Length: 174
Image 1: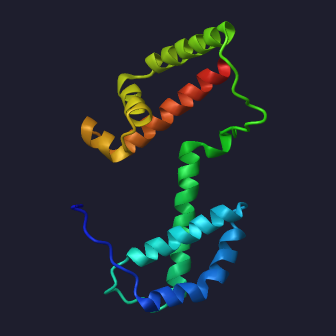
Image 2 (image 1 turned 90 degrees about the vertical axis):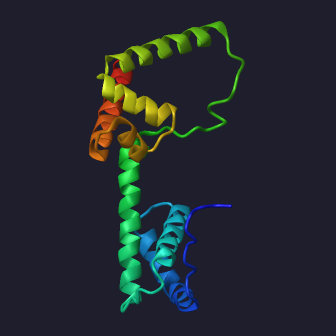
Image 3 (image 1 turned 30 degrees about the horizontal axis):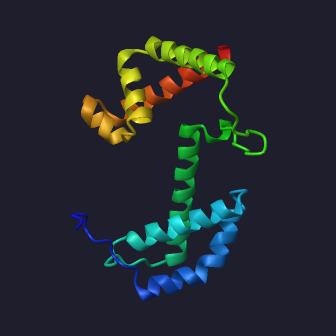
């Protein structure tokens, strides 16, 4: 049993309005995102946000509200991607990156890399290092970290960005 408040169910009218605008909105999203499946995901996120609004709120111009919500979902996507530096990630391609038995050289290189990353982490200021460890290793959210360390959310975000920048620069130098 959950203590969370029940989410409002979308009314039949909202569902119909969404179905009517779906094709046009999906086209709008596809012109802004290169991956068609990502456009579909953004469309679903948009519908989810619209369906979670208070059903007592009446929207005079539903289509405008829908596009405004889609713009917000898209902006959130870009913010998440820039914070996570998603464009710098290297895709794992199984045919190129085949799993092989670890040999002594690989183990040595892995230990050296771990030692370098550890030294990089230790070079960070204590609060920045703590924020990085709480987020990346313990999986806490920024809000939880801010509350635990009694700092602002902005401080957590800035320290996390500093830590990532520092580790990336150190990684490139290695």
